[in-house]
Amino acid sequence: MRNRIIALMIVAVAALCGWADRAHAAAPDKPNILVFLVDDMGLMDTSEPFIVDQDGKPESHPLNAWYRTPSMQRLAAQGVRFSQFYAMSVCSPSRVSIMTGQTSARHHTTQYIKPESNNRGTFGPPDWRWTGIAQGDVTLPALLKTAGYRTLFAGKGHFGPNDSFGALPQHFGFDVNIAGCAYGQPGSYLGTENFGHGIKGREKRAVPGLDKYFGKDIFLTEALTLEMNAAIDDSVKAGKPFFAYMAHYAVHAPFMTDPRFKDDYGSSPEGVIGKGQAVAFATMIEGMDKSLGDMLDHLEQLGVAENTLVLFMGDNGTDAPQGAATGIACSAPLRGKKGTHYEGGMRVPFIAAWAKRDPNNSFQKALPIPAGRIVTTEFGAVYDVFATALAVAGVDNPAGHAIDGVDLRPVLSGQRDTLSDTPRAFLMHFPHQHRSSYFTVYRRGDWKVIYHYEKPAEDRYELFNLAADRSESNNLASSDPAKLREMMTSMVDALHRADAQYPVDQAGKAVEPVVP
Ligand SMILES: [Ca+2]
Figure 1 (cartoon, rainbow, N blue to C red):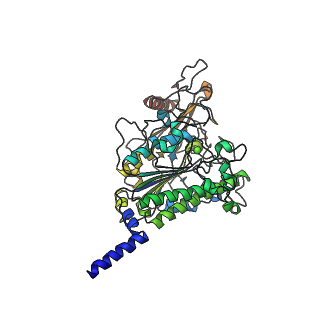
Figure 2: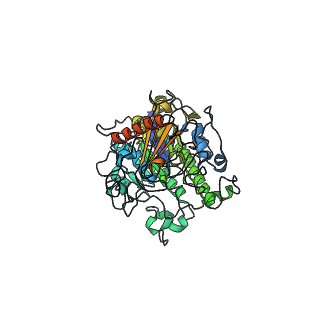
Figure 3: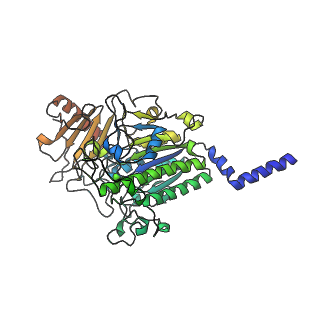
């Protein structure tokens, strides 16, 4: 009897202290998944080196010395990162790719969405999917929700124009929407400016749902972190696994100094980085990185870090404010930036790691991720997140839903160096106007071909061997016509298989790429 009373007292005390919740949370049947997506963050916007030398060893560049991202270094040290990971060249196409597992050529949201109007451009495909995610679309959060996950959204949406189905993440599978809406940049990053509310000229991009921080000295990145951590608390208390999609508005323009970090950037590497906005951009990067560290710490405090897989990535190449758009500058040693057809336009950092390593954890036994590894022999892409997250959650892709991405687990675990026995291909299709206009990029193995739809025949093709020429400085289109023909044939085939839409001519007729 005495033992029974003691046992009951222990149970009562445990319940009062929240141990019962924690014990329940420590034994979920599925792992948690945190997608940490940074807007407009390129491969070089970090102190963690992702570029490798000819021997596959990480190679530090001046930009790595300029930026400060200790939390990314912490995450990379406990997991695996990719030297080569691709996004689409602008926001909405990548975001829809993450949700659907499809390349933009297939899902047809090929251009970034303008909230108020069709952003087709003069010769863009008339029926491109400018309304973004639609009712009935297969989406990652909806599938995970059906499988028992609590699905948490915070930050930037940009999945559909104003008043559309895709405008609000809760329409297509998220249980919680913190500050997500149609547009892709915040009116202001400052709580003291109410994140744009009441600010003339910025009102129409004012961030929704964060009224409790109005007037406070807090940066948007921090407010979103606090809110997402609170949503994770609720999920853990409810004893449910969570899928958290932490999509920071940072580091997208407007470039506003995060005052917490302004003293860290007194001088800069000569010839690589300018002052002013570049410093503001660096402070936004560091604020984003603090968010990552705070979330990792919070997961540890909750006792769920061992059960949480973190997938960190950018949504397109860098938009760091210096250098010519197609020069070797803000992505150096890569060429180009966000919106361009070069590697700097679409190469992003990617890190996969358990939030805390524990080789005895059953989820980590099922997916062991070696510490501090860098994948150099294979590339991944944002549309792989869909297949990988489903596989980790034990959920099948619905029959009839065509996807372009693959399950990355064999490479994440180090079981394989490559994802298939034949060289992988990457297709990035942009039949619109932006910094670079009307182009398709196709990579297979080490080779990359770029097709320019509107240029005269002599300038229509660019061909690079990325293994020998990572800065895309030596166009081989004229000197290697056989390889050009082979790559163009494969590109055209890939576009047809994806049911791609093409730019149109003055008469409105679709213009398909020409194999030379
Ligand atoms: Ca973006």
